[in-house]
Length: 178
Image (cartoon, rainbow, N blue to C red; front, side):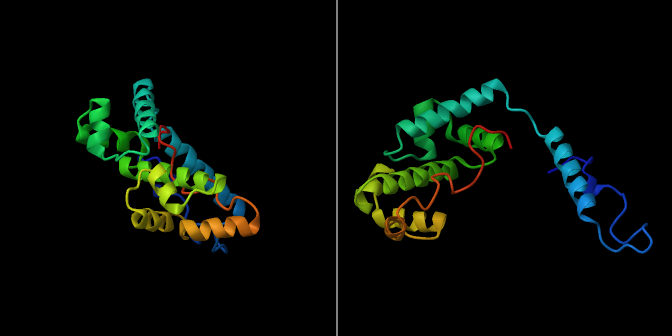
């Protein structure tokens, strides 16, 4: 993760060592240590090159255009004229997430938006999000958000609004460097 300069790896003072009568760090020391670690790790993080940003933008646009379609790694690669393995490795190297995980996240965010917007059946929402099998869609939704799409809709209606922010599934935005 960090390359050598990380204070967590340094041989500096440890809690309870080299400081007579002290056994714990105080809050200010912990905060300074965390800030230093973040600065050092960010300094080591590679910048996203313009060609990488363009690559990610083209992948994202392809996924958005074909969200309702079957989207395997091979199909995205074919649509973008990339070898599937190259596409997979480059996408993960730039974003820190797999292409399949990214596609699932975008589909789940789309599902939340559709559930919040209208009265489409769960089956129709699943199809609009690219899932042919409604049961598989329900399982993936529950894995992502902890409740089924039907439960989500009922709770959302009961509470009179949106329960989840569409991007609540977490993870870095594709196109951002890690």
